Structure formats: structure tokens, C-alpha cells
Image (tube, rainbow, N blue to C red; front, side):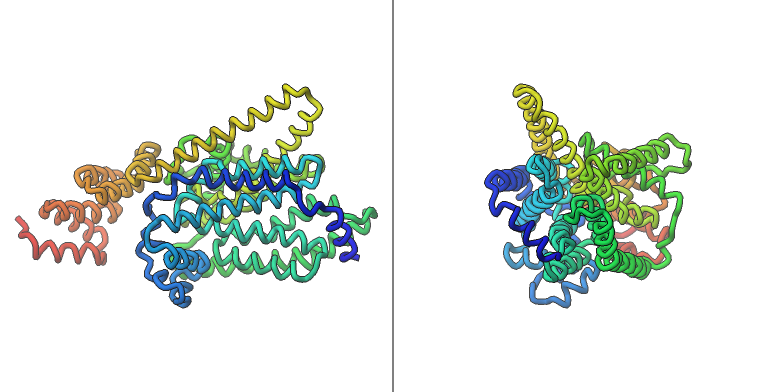
Length: 515
């Protein structure tokens, strides 16, 4: 009986493991320490829209306004309202919440990794996974960026749902089913990527729990797996597909006549996955903005390399499914959680690449790496003492290097000008980082430098009205009304219905005469 199995498992598990407690707490503490210097960072980029100038979060009791402001992510908006009520309108409190959520995610990932490993080296697997997740610099854009809250909070619900889902599949009671579904719904109301939850849960069941299930009879295990698929996994996956269809319909409403499928962008999406993996392995040249050139042919070197790298990951997942199933789960998790972002690329919505989007996916990546480290630890256990110490020292050096890099990234985010200058240096021929650097310079009172950046942006994309508008407004702010009028008129010529250009020109008419 399932209840008997659950009782036997609960009796076999130790109630308290001091070493696990210390390892888990140490990883969480490390996650907090590396983000201390991010707490006093200012609002940046989308923070002004999502938090600073968001009227819906001024009163935490105004639930209607909170939900309607962002109907697809109401829980995120509610969390901002709570922060504002507790801390005020300054960035500090919002950063504190992000860091605390990241620390909680480290704990949840540790617990999940330890339960999935369930072997002699489960502690090593869980510790390595949690520590890499805690300090890796690729997490900085989600944790240190207030608008990255959706990624961090979604991960909290997602991991809690996986932990409860495993208890549900083991037959531990209906309460776990309710908690699993509840956490998944909360994750969906936080970030659309949570639609992949049922598929990750199925991978955990099929690749790990099915192989280690209690019934010794293979036919009984198969029957149990079929029952779980029909009663748990299939309904959840069908619901996820339906939710995806609804979200696509909402997207069409939000952006009328702008949502269409572009099959050639599939190659671009695969190239973005390759770049994410490279940044995880070698976290250099990070930036808030990444320029991604279109991949126009299947036979371009970038396309071939992107296909080969994705194929290699899938092949590794397949080959590891018996010898090291946790590696397979981690890779499948990583790839599945990148599907929603890839779908947006195919629909040509938003920027093709953003580091904060891989926060939850990275949990799977580090789970696979942690499983590999556990395997290596098993080999080192039979090696000499010196070899074991060298292995431990190498891992410690990696953690230190990642921690230092994370602290440095936080320092970059402390200055919007430095942040956008970095993006301009990495993508000098793209107009968007030029515009945003211009905004940061203008806000910092460095208007002459802002004008230079706006002019370069106009030169790079002469058909875009935004550059002319920002340049005209900046020149007007400097008192150079004739030059401002010229650029605003060009903006109006490009977009005759532009309200901002018309209002600015009307205001200029009352300030200074045209020559």
C-alpha cells in the first residue's frame, strides 16, 4: 500500500542531519554574503516602470489595482506592494527581498538535490549544486536587479512545488497534491516559464523515482508509472499546454498585429542557448544587453555550432539516464526552462537574450554539474588523501572566483552609466544600448555626453523615432531650442501621430522663437 511505503521511507530517513544542516545553511549564508554590496544599488532600467513609477503598489490593500496593473504576474506586483509598505519607496527594501528569496531558493535547491540524489554522495551533490547556484555571477541579473524579482520568486514556488510533487507521487497523501498544484499556480502567476513545471516533474519521476521505486517487480513498477502518468502527469501537462495557448492569446491582445511565428528564428534561439551555456562555463563579458545577430542560414558556422551544442547536451542526457540519471534530469530541466524564452524569440517578442531569464533554468544546469561532482567525489573517495584535498581545493577556488565575480557584477550595477557603458562596449554598433546610456548620462546631469550617444543612436538607426525624440528633448533641456526643434520635427515626420513629439514642439513654440 502507498501509505505503508511512505511510512517505511519516513522511518528510514534520519530526522536531523547536522552535516546537511551546516552545508545547507552555509550555502544560503554564502548566497547572502556575495550580494551584500547590491543592497544599496539604485533603481535601473525597468525598475522605474515596475517599481518607482508604479502607482498600483502604493497601497498593499488595493488588490484590484495590483492585479490589473500586471494581470499575468500579479504575485510579483503584490510582492512589490508589500516591500513598499514595509520599507518605503527606496530601492533598499526591494533588494533585501530579492536577496532573501535567493537565499531561500538555495535552501530549496539543496533539499531537492539531496532528495533526488538519495545515494552515498547525496550530501556532496546537494552541497555542490546549492553553492554553485548561490554564487555564480550569471545569477546577478535576476538577484541584483529588482525587476528580476519575477525570476527569483517564480523559482521559489517552482522548487517548493517539485519537493511537494515528489511526496505526492510517492503516495504520501492528498495534502501534497494540493500543495503541489497550489505552488505551481503561484509560480504561473509569477512568471510564464513555470508552464514547464509538469514536464520537469515528469522527468524527475521517469528518470529517478521510477528507477528507485520500492516494488521489486518490474511489471508492478511499470504499472505504477503508468498510473502516475495518467492520474498526475498527463492532467498537469495538458493544463500547461492550455495555459500556453491562453498566454499566446493574451500576447496577441497586448501586441495586436505584432505577434507572428518566424521559423528562421529557431536557429537564433538555439544560438542563444549556446551562449547561455558558454556564459555559465566561462562567465566573462556579461552585460545587461546582449546583441544577437540573426542566423540566416542553416549552414552558417554559428548555426552548426548551436545545433551541435544542443545536440551534445541532449545526447549526454540520454547516455546518462541509467548511469547518472540526475545528470539527465538537470540537462532536461535546463533545456525545458529555456523553451518559453525561445518561443518568444520565434514570435519576435522582446530582446533575444537576457541573463535573468536563465535563473530558474540554471537550477537544472547546476544540478547536473553537482551530480557530476558527486560522481567525481565517489572516485576521489578511493584515491589518496592528497588527491582528495586537491579536489576540494580546486572546487573552493572555483567558488571563490565566482564569488568575486559576483561582487564585481554587483558593483557594476551600482552605477547605471557604468552598466550601460559596458553594454555599449560589447555592442558598439547597436542603437539600443546607446539610447539607454544616453538616458543614464542625461539623468546623471552629463547632457553633452548624452547628446553624443543619442546622435550615434540616430546614425545607427535613422528610421527609429525614439532616438530623434530623446535627442530633441535632451537638447531642449540644455536650452538649445533650435536644434531640439529640428530633431523633434524629424521625429514627427517619421511618426506623424507621435503625441510626445507634438507636445514637445508645442511647448518649444512658447519658449523660444524659431529662426
